[in-house]
Image 1 (cartoon, rainbow, N blue to C red):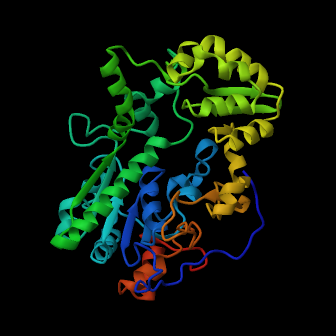
Image 2 (cartoon, helix red, strand yellow):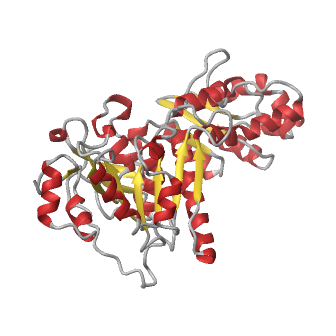
Image 3 (cartoon, rainbow, N blue to C red):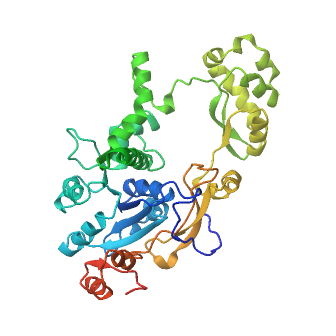
Length: 420
């Protein structure tokens, strides 16, 4: 992970929602009961778009904060632009805190195991009764049906939904290299929330929104299901795919690897000219894309031979000059120095604290891949410390300082260490 110098932290000054340059979701209050990736990614989208997102976590902090290995970056990645309220949901007083807060909220999202919020008395029905305008988003493993009571995970959904089969070699299912299903489920949740908010403008009433991992993978698999229906044959994994284009592969270069895709008949002569292959360009047996696909086994070796001695930078330079799709095969940490992301404003410096808070660092991480009004929704505040905003949120609900400190002493709520 690329480390960078530490500037002044981002702040969350009160935004004037009446100005033309106000954030799209300015003025909305969201209660984020998410954990790990699916729920927090949904809340992240709303937070980055300007909503006030209050992260609800236990007094000791959400367990994702303590993950190591593959999960070490989860909390810092998916919890910027949020406040933190630390409260024990199982304690009657903690529940009353949430009920007061729900009356002030526009949206609630949660991705606990099926039935958890109902057992806490914080399910859709009682909270809708408290606040009929509330949008309640449940992010689960499955939508209602035979599987709805089952627990799930990103990797479970990838296996069950066919994504792992499509990613790995035959007989070796392989999960995708990122939490794509968790994030996609969170994104669909955010889309559903926005649609429900739009409908509330007309009806004045909130509603329940439901997004799920399994159905998200099913959506991703639709193109392969359609191909199987058209061909009448089982769909092969992507590692054994029957390519629709002849030159559409990873090629070895002198100092690394590069992907090149020639996807049209107009690109073919430009590609041949860029790499000095006039005989291939003039061969009538290679005139059309389908001709080249049929000749793929004999066509690729001379192309590989031409590209192999060239540096990656040279291959990219020639392809880009000829408007041929191409890309280096990059590692994730290399994106922090990507000149396009740096120039387009697509990165922000985020404070990351892992299992050992003393080892916290700052790193450049991607923002939402959107431009709205000509700019990228940015970083207003860093991921919060546990209970960083408990005092302020409870005070806004009418709790006095002595009452707040009593609840903290009894373990009902958690305060930031600076306020203890």
